[in-house]
Image 1 (tube, rainbow, N blue to C red):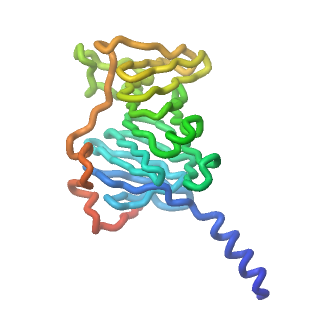
Image 2 (cartoon, helix red, strand yellow):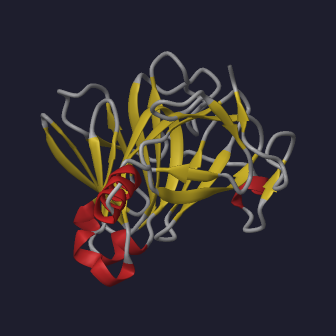
Amino acid sequence: MPLLLLILLGLSSMSGWAKEVGKVTHLSGLLNVERAGAATKILSVQSVVLEGDLLRTEEDTYARIKFNDNSEVVLRPETSFKINEMRFQEATGAANKSDMELIKGGMRAVTGLIGKNNPDAVKVGTPTATIGIRGTHFGLLFCQDSCANVANPNGVVPENGLHADVVSGAISVTNAAGTLELSAGQFGYVPTPNAMPQVVPPSQGVQVTMPPAIRQNEASSTGIGKGKESQCAIQ
């Protein structure tokens, strides 16, 4: 076979490979990943995550992911989170992009270099609104008859829909009804895709929290998630 044809076949094969975009740094239980054309796997601490991965945390599981641009996401128990697209090369900042999706459950996020250099290139989709960032630390919780174990400061279980809180910076919350800007210390709520996002008082706001073991900067885990364990396929 001619050398040129071999090279072209090799390049074609490589172009189909999913890119490594981050790594699991903390884990408190079972974290599953679904990948196109592959069996579902259980990830451990130090497992890589790829562009296109659908991550699912099981009951009582918190997972912390660090991406290549130094952004971080913490997933709450019973959360589904999709990495739709992520491109990051420091030398080509204009082409960088982060497109994630919270399908179910809750998360906290701290933006990294993509958000710092080009905030418009970062977005997080949800069932009721799309989140844009302005260099920030924020939380999202999507409830669909699934938040009975969560309560606001008044002890009230959150209503169905998307709940947002901002610790620093700002986020934009956009859907078919319009856009709402939330800044540090504010809370937001979006009941449906066609309802205008709204600011809610702190007494009614919902803040996504995480255990100290997940917050600390040293990688940690219990059960599944030990650094020397390999990924396990679920048949």
